Image (cartoon, rainbow, N blue to C red; front, top):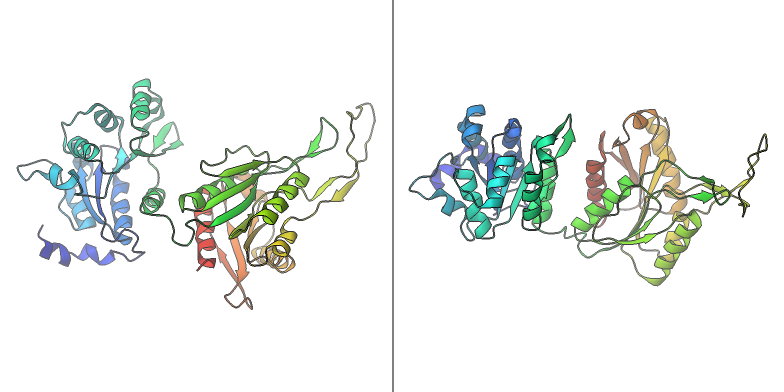
Length: 420
Protein backbone atom coordinates (compact mmCIF):
# COMPACT_ATOMS: atom_id res chain seq x y z
CA UNK A 1 0.00 0.00 0.00
CA UNK A 2 1.41 3.39 -0.93
CA UNK A 3 2.02 6.11 1.65
CA UNK A 4 -0.69 8.20 0.01
CA UNK A 5 -3.30 5.46 0.28
CA UNK A 6 -2.13 4.59 3.79
CA UNK A 7 -2.52 8.15 4.98
CA UNK A 8 -6.13 8.23 3.84
CA UNK A 9 -7.13 4.82 5.22
CA UNK A 10 -10.10 5.35 7.59
CA UNK A 11 -8.69 2.95 10.18
CA UNK A 12 -5.92 5.46 10.86
CA UNK A 13 -8.45 7.88 12.33
CA UNK A 14 -7.90 6.21 15.71
CA UNK A 15 -4.11 6.66 15.77
CA UNK A 16 -2.97 8.35 19.01
CA UNK A 17 -6.57 8.71 20.22
CA UNK A 18 -5.55 7.30 23.65
CA UNK A 19 -1.98 8.60 23.84
CA UNK A 20 1.22 9.29 21.91
CA UNK A 21 3.62 6.98 23.76
CA UNK A 22 4.21 4.88 20.60
CA UNK A 23 4.15 7.69 18.06
CA UNK A 24 6.69 7.02 15.31
CA UNK A 25 7.19 3.41 16.44
CA UNK A 26 6.92 0.60 13.89
CA UNK A 27 5.51 -2.57 15.40
CA UNK A 28 5.41 -5.94 13.61
CA UNK A 29 2.57 -8.08 14.95
CA UNK A 30 3.03 -11.78 14.16
CA UNK A 31 -0.16 -13.82 14.60
CA UNK A 32 0.38 -17.56 15.01
CA UNK A 33 -2.19 -20.35 14.60
CA UNK A 34 -4.18 -20.23 17.83
CA UNK A 35 -7.87 -19.62 18.46
CA UNK A 36 -6.71 -16.61 20.48
CA UNK A 37 -5.78 -15.01 17.13
CA UNK A 38 -9.06 -13.08 17.07
CA UNK A 39 -7.75 -10.97 19.97
CA UNK A 40 -4.91 -9.74 17.74
CA UNK A 41 -7.38 -7.49 15.92
CA UNK A 42 -8.25 -5.71 19.15
CA UNK A 43 -4.59 -5.66 20.19
CA UNK A 44 -3.46 -4.04 16.94
CA UNK A 45 -6.06 -1.31 17.44
CA UNK A 46 -4.88 -0.69 21.00
CA UNK A 47 -1.32 -0.24 19.75
CA UNK A 48 -2.53 2.21 17.12
CA UNK A 49 -4.55 4.18 19.66
CA UNK A 50 -1.23 4.91 21.36
CA UNK A 51 0.43 6.00 18.13
CA UNK A 52 2.02 2.83 16.70
CA UNK A 53 2.30 1.93 13.01
CA UNK A 54 1.33 -1.77 12.98
CA UNK A 55 2.03 -4.35 10.28
CA UNK A 56 0.57 -7.83 10.70
CA UNK A 57 2.21 -11.11 9.64
CA UNK A 58 -0.35 -13.93 9.67
CA UNK A 59 0.37 -17.65 9.59
CA UNK A 60 -1.35 -19.95 7.13
CA UNK A 61 -3.35 -21.50 9.99
CA UNK A 62 -4.59 -18.07 11.06
CA UNK A 63 -5.84 -17.20 7.56
CA UNK A 64 -8.14 -20.23 7.79
CA UNK A 65 -9.66 -18.78 10.95
CA UNK A 66 -9.61 -15.07 10.11
CA UNK A 67 -9.55 -13.45 6.68
CA UNK A 68 -6.40 -11.29 6.25
CA UNK A 69 -8.59 -8.37 5.19
CA UNK A 70 -9.69 -8.01 8.82
CA UNK A 71 -6.10 -7.27 9.83
CA UNK A 72 -5.72 -4.89 6.88
CA UNK A 73 -8.94 -3.15 7.94
CA UNK A 74 -7.69 -2.92 11.53
CA UNK A 75 -4.25 -1.49 10.78
CA UNK A 76 -4.50 0.17 7.37
CA UNK A 77 -1.38 -1.77 6.32
CA UNK A 78 -0.85 -4.65 3.92
CA UNK A 79 -0.94 -8.02 5.70
CA UNK A 80 1.99 -10.37 5.10
CA UNK A 81 0.82 -13.95 4.50
CA UNK A 82 3.67 -15.10 2.27
CA UNK A 83 7.16 -13.99 1.32
CA UNK A 84 7.82 -12.81 -2.21
CA UNK A 85 10.54 -11.17 -4.26
CA UNK A 86 9.71 -7.95 -2.38
CA UNK A 87 11.70 -9.39 0.56
CA UNK A 88 9.03 -8.60 3.14
CA UNK A 89 11.05 -10.19 5.96
CA UNK A 90 13.99 -7.86 5.25
CA UNK A 91 11.79 -4.76 4.99
CA UNK A 92 10.16 -5.58 8.31
CA UNK A 93 12.90 -7.11 10.43
CA UNK A 94 16.34 -6.17 9.14
CA UNK A 95 18.52 -3.76 11.11
CA UNK A 96 16.49 -0.76 12.36
CA UNK A 97 13.53 -1.55 10.10
CA UNK A 98 11.11 -1.88 13.04
CA UNK A 99 11.10 -0.98 16.72
CA UNK A 100 9.43 -4.09 18.12
CA UNK A 101 8.24 -7.53 17.00
CA UNK A 102 5.35 -9.03 18.96
CA UNK A 103 4.07 -12.59 18.54
CA UNK A 104 0.47 -12.58 19.76
CA UNK A 105 -0.60 -15.28 20.19
CA UNK A 106 2.54 -17.46 20.06
CA UNK A 107 2.33 -21.25 19.72
CA UNK A 108 4.77 -23.91 20.87
CA UNK A 109 5.60 -24.48 17.19
CA UNK A 110 6.54 -20.83 16.61
CA UNK A 111 8.56 -20.77 19.84
CA UNK A 112 10.48 -23.90 18.83
CA UNK A 113 11.33 -22.52 15.40
CA UNK A 114 12.67 -19.27 16.86
CA UNK A 115 14.75 -21.13 19.47
CA UNK A 116 16.26 -23.46 16.86
CA UNK A 117 16.74 -21.09 13.91
CA UNK A 118 14.08 -22.67 11.69
CA UNK A 119 12.60 -20.22 9.18
CA UNK A 120 10.18 -22.07 6.91
CA UNK A 121 7.16 -19.74 7.29
CA UNK A 122 6.71 -15.96 6.99
CA UNK A 123 6.48 -15.60 10.79
CA UNK A 124 9.50 -17.78 11.58
CA UNK A 125 11.55 -16.02 8.89
CA UNK A 126 10.62 -12.57 10.18
CA UNK A 127 11.58 -13.73 13.70
CA UNK A 128 14.88 -15.20 12.54
CA UNK A 129 15.83 -11.95 10.81
CA UNK A 130 14.62 -9.82 13.73
CA UNK A 131 16.45 -11.99 16.25
CA UNK A 132 19.66 -11.63 14.27
CA UNK A 133 19.28 -7.87 13.81
CA UNK A 134 18.53 -7.50 17.52
CA UNK A 135 15.09 -5.97 17.13
CA UNK A 136 13.32 -6.46 20.50
CA UNK A 137 10.95 -9.44 20.43
CA UNK A 138 7.99 -9.99 22.72
CA UNK A 139 6.34 -13.44 22.91
CA UNK A 140 2.82 -14.05 24.25
CA UNK A 141 2.40 -17.81 24.59
CA UNK A 142 -0.94 -19.61 24.22
CA UNK A 143 -1.29 -23.42 24.36
CA UNK A 144 -2.63 -26.29 26.47
CA UNK A 145 -1.06 -26.53 29.91
CA UNK A 146 0.43 -29.95 29.08
CA UNK A 147 2.25 -28.40 26.11
CA UNK A 148 3.49 -25.56 28.27
CA UNK A 149 4.89 -28.13 30.73
CA UNK A 150 6.58 -30.13 27.97
CA UNK A 151 10.31 -30.39 28.64
CA UNK A 152 11.18 -29.40 25.05
CA UNK A 153 9.03 -26.26 25.31
CA UNK A 154 10.62 -25.43 28.67
CA UNK A 155 14.07 -25.90 27.12
CA UNK A 156 13.18 -23.46 24.35
CA UNK A 157 11.86 -20.92 26.87
CA UNK A 158 15.01 -21.27 28.99
CA UNK A 159 17.21 -20.70 25.95
CA UNK A 160 15.30 -17.55 24.94
CA UNK A 161 14.27 -16.06 28.28
CA UNK A 162 17.26 -13.73 28.60
CA UNK A 163 17.19 -12.82 24.91
CA UNK A 164 13.56 -11.90 24.34
CA UNK A 165 10.63 -10.77 26.52
CA UNK A 166 8.02 -13.34 27.53
CA UNK A 167 4.58 -12.15 28.63
CA UNK A 168 3.23 -14.82 30.98
CA UNK A 169 0.12 -16.71 29.87
CA UNK A 170 -2.94 -17.05 32.09
CA UNK A 171 -3.38 -20.59 33.42
CA UNK A 172 -7.13 -21.17 33.06
CA UNK A 173 -9.17 -24.35 32.43
CA UNK A 174 -6.09 -26.46 31.78
CA UNK A 175 -4.73 -24.04 29.21
CA UNK A 176 -1.96 -21.46 29.14
CA UNK A 177 -4.14 -18.78 27.60
CA UNK A 178 -2.75 -15.71 25.87
CA UNK A 179 -2.63 -12.63 28.11
CA UNK A 180 -5.29 -10.01 27.55
CA UNK A 181 -4.51 -7.31 24.94
CA UNK A 182 -4.64 -4.57 27.59
CA UNK A 183 -1.99 -6.35 29.70
CA UNK A 184 0.36 -6.75 26.74
CA UNK A 185 -0.20 -3.11 25.81
CA UNK A 186 1.00 -2.08 29.27
CA UNK A 187 4.19 -4.07 28.74
CA UNK A 188 4.74 -2.40 25.36
CA UNK A 189 4.20 1.07 26.80
CA UNK A 190 6.66 0.35 29.60
CA UNK A 191 9.26 -0.92 27.15
CA UNK A 192 9.42 2.39 25.35
CA UNK A 193 10.59 4.34 28.34
CA UNK A 194 9.82 4.91 31.97
CA UNK A 195 7.13 7.30 33.07
CA UNK A 196 8.63 10.81 33.04
CA UNK A 197 6.63 11.51 36.18
CA UNK A 198 7.91 8.50 38.14
CA UNK A 199 11.40 8.04 36.70
CA UNK A 200 14.00 8.15 39.50
CA UNK A 201 11.37 9.13 42.06
CA UNK A 202 12.20 7.76 45.51
CA UNK A 203 9.24 5.72 46.79
CA UNK A 204 8.91 4.28 50.28
CA UNK A 205 6.09 1.83 50.77
CA UNK A 206 4.79 -0.65 53.33
CA UNK A 207 3.04 -3.86 52.27
CA UNK A 208 1.87 -7.20 53.59
CA UNK A 209 0.42 -8.15 56.99
CA UNK A 210 1.99 -7.89 60.43
CA UNK A 211 2.17 -10.65 63.04
CA UNK A 212 1.71 -9.91 66.76
CA UNK A 213 2.78 -12.58 69.24
CA UNK A 214 0.52 -13.72 72.06
CA UNK A 215 3.22 -16.13 73.24
CA UNK A 216 6.22 -17.71 71.46
CA UNK A 217 3.88 -20.02 69.54
CA UNK A 218 0.57 -18.20 69.05
CA UNK A 219 -0.04 -14.96 67.22
CA UNK A 220 -2.58 -12.45 65.89
CA UNK A 221 -2.49 -11.59 62.20
CA UNK A 222 -4.80 -11.07 59.21
CA UNK A 223 -5.45 -12.55 55.77
CA UNK A 224 -3.40 -10.05 53.75
CA UNK A 225 -1.18 -11.77 51.17
CA UNK A 226 0.66 -8.57 50.25
CA UNK A 227 -0.34 -9.07 46.61
CA UNK A 228 -1.64 -5.57 45.91
CA UNK A 229 1.44 -3.97 47.45
CA UNK A 230 3.81 -6.25 45.54
CA UNK A 231 2.03 -5.61 42.24
CA UNK A 232 2.01 -1.86 42.86
CA UNK A 233 5.73 -1.90 43.71
CA UNK A 234 6.40 -3.81 40.48
CA UNK A 235 4.41 -1.21 38.51
CA UNK A 236 6.38 1.65 40.05
CA UNK A 237 9.71 -0.07 39.38
CA UNK A 238 8.72 -0.65 35.75
CA UNK A 239 7.92 3.06 35.52
CA UNK A 240 11.45 3.92 36.66
CA UNK A 241 10.87 4.65 40.34
CA UNK A 242 13.39 3.68 43.04
CA UNK A 243 11.29 1.62 45.46
CA UNK A 244 12.08 0.68 49.04
CA UNK A 245 9.56 -1.81 50.37
CA UNK A 246 9.03 -2.45 54.09
CA UNK A 247 7.42 -5.85 53.83
CA UNK A 248 5.56 -7.88 56.42
CA UNK A 249 5.31 -11.69 56.18
CA UNK A 250 3.15 -11.81 53.04
CA UNK A 251 2.89 -14.85 50.78
CA UNK A 252 3.73 -12.90 47.61
CA UNK A 253 7.35 -12.65 46.51
CA UNK A 254 8.67 -9.06 46.45
CA UNK A 255 9.38 -7.72 42.95
CA UNK A 256 12.86 -7.67 41.45
CA UNK A 257 14.43 -4.26 41.61
CA UNK A 258 12.96 -3.30 44.97
CA UNK A 259 15.06 -2.71 48.06
CA UNK A 260 13.23 -4.88 50.60
CA UNK A 261 13.25 -4.47 54.38
CA UNK A 262 11.64 -7.54 55.93
CA UNK A 263 9.72 -7.06 59.17
CA UNK A 264 7.28 -9.12 61.20
CA UNK A 265 5.39 -7.00 63.74
CA UNK A 266 3.76 -3.58 63.62
CA UNK A 267 6.45 -2.34 66.00
CA UNK A 268 9.19 -3.45 63.62
CA UNK A 269 7.37 -1.89 60.66
CA UNK A 270 6.97 1.40 62.52
CA UNK A 271 10.66 1.43 63.49
CA UNK A 272 11.77 0.71 59.92
CA UNK A 273 9.45 3.36 58.45
CA UNK A 274 10.56 6.06 60.92
CA UNK A 275 14.21 5.20 60.32
CA UNK A 276 13.81 5.57 56.55
CA UNK A 277 11.86 8.81 56.91
CA UNK A 278 14.49 10.26 59.25
CA UNK A 279 17.48 9.26 57.13
CA UNK A 280 16.35 10.04 53.56
CA UNK A 281 14.16 12.38 51.56
CA UNK A 282 11.31 10.64 49.76
CA UNK A 283 9.12 11.77 46.88
CA UNK A 284 6.26 9.35 47.57
CA UNK A 285 5.24 7.33 50.63
CA UNK A 286 2.62 4.60 50.21
CA UNK A 287 1.10 2.92 53.26
CA UNK A 288 -0.31 -0.26 51.72
CA UNK A 289 0.40 -2.70 54.57
CA UNK A 290 -2.41 -4.38 56.52
CA UNK A 291 -0.96 -3.39 59.90
CA UNK A 292 -2.53 -4.79 63.07
CA UNK A 293 -4.75 -2.23 64.75
CA UNK A 294 -4.43 -3.92 68.15
CA UNK A 295 -1.56 -5.87 69.69
CA UNK A 296 -1.29 -7.97 72.87
CA UNK A 297 -0.52 -5.76 75.86
CA UNK A 298 1.68 -8.28 77.67
CA UNK A 299 2.83 -11.13 75.40
CA UNK A 300 3.81 -14.20 77.37
CA UNK A 301 7.48 -15.14 77.21
CA UNK A 302 6.56 -18.82 77.54
CA UNK A 303 3.88 -20.92 75.85
CA UNK A 304 0.50 -20.39 77.51
CA UNK A 305 -0.80 -23.68 78.89
CA UNK A 306 -3.79 -25.15 77.07
CA UNK A 307 -5.48 -26.59 80.17
CA UNK A 308 -7.56 -23.47 80.90
CA UNK A 309 -11.26 -23.41 80.03
CA UNK A 310 -11.07 -19.76 79.02
CA UNK A 311 -8.40 -17.20 78.41
CA UNK A 312 -8.49 -13.42 78.38
CA UNK A 313 -5.97 -11.55 76.26
CA UNK A 314 -5.78 -7.82 76.77
CA UNK A 315 -5.05 -5.81 73.61
CA UNK A 316 -3.78 -2.27 73.23
CA UNK A 317 -4.03 0.13 70.33
CA UNK A 318 -1.08 -0.03 67.95
CA UNK A 319 0.38 3.28 66.77
CA UNK A 320 -0.66 4.42 63.29
CA UNK A 321 2.44 4.80 61.15
CA UNK A 322 0.61 6.91 58.58
CA UNK A 323 -0.14 9.54 61.25
CA UNK A 324 3.61 10.23 61.64
CA UNK A 325 4.62 10.55 57.97
CA UNK A 326 3.71 14.20 57.32
CA UNK A 327 5.22 15.20 60.67
CA UNK A 328 8.56 13.81 59.53
CA UNK A 329 8.38 14.88 55.86
CA UNK A 330 5.82 17.59 55.26
CA UNK A 331 6.07 17.81 51.47
CA UNK A 332 6.07 14.10 50.63
CA UNK A 333 3.22 12.72 48.50
CA UNK A 334 1.41 10.45 50.98
CA UNK A 335 -0.93 7.68 49.82
CA UNK A 336 -2.80 5.60 52.38
CA UNK A 337 -5.10 2.59 52.20
CA UNK A 338 -8.42 2.07 53.98
CA UNK A 339 -10.14 -1.33 54.10
CA UNK A 340 -13.72 -1.80 55.27
CA UNK A 341 -16.27 -4.61 55.02
CA UNK A 342 -19.75 -4.63 53.50
CA UNK A 343 -20.34 -0.87 53.38
CA UNK A 344 -22.25 1.17 50.86
CA UNK A 345 -20.03 3.14 48.50
CA UNK A 346 -20.99 6.43 50.15
CA UNK A 347 -20.10 5.05 53.60
CA UNK A 348 -16.78 3.75 52.28
CA UNK A 349 -15.96 7.18 50.84
CA UNK A 350 -16.87 8.87 54.15
CA UNK A 351 -14.56 6.49 56.02
CA UNK A 352 -11.72 7.23 53.60
CA UNK A 353 -12.37 10.98 53.82
CA UNK A 354 -12.12 10.82 57.60
CA UNK A 355 -8.76 9.07 57.34
CA UNK A 356 -7.64 11.60 54.71
CA UNK A 357 -8.31 14.48 57.10
CA UNK A 358 -6.82 12.74 60.15
CA UNK A 359 -3.54 11.77 58.49
CA UNK A 360 -2.96 14.72 56.16
CA UNK A 361 -2.58 12.24 53.30
CA UNK A 362 -2.92 13.34 49.69
CA UNK A 363 -4.95 10.28 48.67
CA UNK A 364 -6.61 7.33 50.37
CA UNK A 365 -7.20 4.11 48.42
CA UNK A 366 -10.45 2.74 49.85
CA UNK A 367 -11.66 -0.78 49.24
CA UNK A 368 -14.30 -3.11 50.61
CA UNK A 369 -12.90 -6.52 51.54
CA UNK A 370 -16.27 -7.92 52.59
CA UNK A 371 -18.32 -10.80 51.23
CA UNK A 372 -17.99 -10.02 47.51
CA UNK A 373 -14.22 -9.68 47.77
CA UNK A 374 -13.93 -12.88 49.83
CA UNK A 375 -15.51 -14.88 46.98
CA UNK A 376 -12.66 -13.88 44.64
CA UNK A 377 -9.74 -12.22 46.46
CA UNK A 378 -7.86 -11.58 43.20
CA UNK A 379 -10.44 -8.97 42.19
CA UNK A 380 -11.41 -5.75 43.84
CA UNK A 381 -12.90 -2.32 43.30
CA UNK A 382 -10.91 0.53 44.82
CA UNK A 383 -11.97 4.14 45.21
CA UNK A 384 -9.34 6.87 45.26
CA UNK A 385 -10.40 9.62 47.65
CA UNK A 386 -8.33 12.79 47.56
CA UNK A 387 -8.28 16.55 47.31
CA UNK A 388 -8.37 18.70 44.22
CA UNK A 389 -5.34 20.80 43.26
CA UNK A 390 -6.24 23.49 45.82
CA UNK A 391 -6.89 20.93 48.59
CA UNK A 392 -10.34 22.44 49.08
CA UNK A 393 -12.68 19.88 47.51
CA UNK A 394 -12.82 16.11 47.83
CA UNK A 395 -12.57 14.14 44.59
CA UNK A 396 -13.26 10.43 44.13
CA UNK A 397 -12.50 7.99 41.34
CA UNK A 398 -13.48 4.33 41.17
CA UNK A 399 -11.46 1.64 39.41
CA UNK A 400 -14.44 -0.67 38.86
CA UNK A 401 -14.14 -4.40 39.56
CA UNK A 402 -10.80 -5.55 38.12
CA UNK A 403 -8.12 -8.10 38.87
CA UNK A 404 -5.36 -6.90 41.15
CA UNK A 405 -2.89 -6.52 38.30
CA UNK A 406 -5.12 -3.87 36.75
CA UNK A 407 -5.87 -2.36 40.13
CA UNK A 408 -2.13 -1.80 40.57
CA UNK A 409 -1.94 -0.11 37.16
CA UNK A 410 -4.92 2.07 38.09
CA UNK A 411 -3.30 3.17 41.37
CA UNK A 412 -0.01 3.86 39.60
CA UNK A 413 -1.77 6.20 37.16
CA UNK A 414 -3.48 7.99 40.04
CA UNK A 415 -0.12 8.49 41.74
CA UNK A 416 1.29 9.85 38.47
CA UNK A 417 -1.57 12.33 38.23
CA UNK A 418 -0.63 13.67 41.67
CA UNK A 419 2.97 14.24 40.56
CA UNK A 420 2.09 16.48 37.63
